[in-house]
Image 1 (cartoon, rainbow, N blue to C red):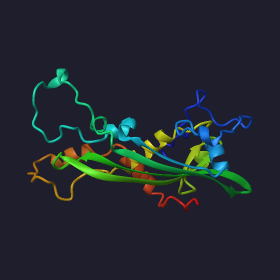
Image 2: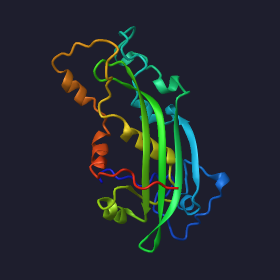
Image 3: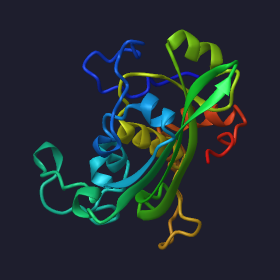
Image 4: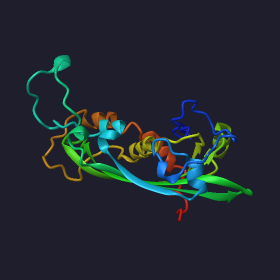
Length: 233
């Protein structure tokens, strides 16, 4: 699939796992920003937690500006002060996540899998009335990890689940953020806007231009007709 990710390695080398690399990592030291996926799956571990929306900067940037719908006041242009993002002002909103690792026998060999679930309440901008729109975003994905890019490319069109390259460490927060962005609506709009909007010529084109930039990847993923694969116990 176009735009396949490498597995979010945060290791300085950033390469695939060396068979001689010591995969042991004790559970108390489990770090979601440097997750040892191979060991996590081998021990059938699970982990859960949450991050403030502001800690996921790309997701925070996709939210509705704090002054959306308000008349312009004060300085404008390049010298205008930039308002803090909505997520930076509201740190109570969290992205909740749960990850489960497992090994599955395929072709006589153990394969590393990760089941990731996440949800958050975000505030998007309605592309019809430009006012804030509360949206609940949910993620439920299964990932299969393989040795290298060639193996990932070979499997990509054959299975419905996401295929990632197994690296020494996985930044789980980056993966959660990627999936949350892909789960955002293509064009966020209220079913019924809180204020009447008089549509004018060019409004449709403007809405299309502001569509979720990750929508094309999400559509390609849906074309694989997958439901995320079987549940991981």
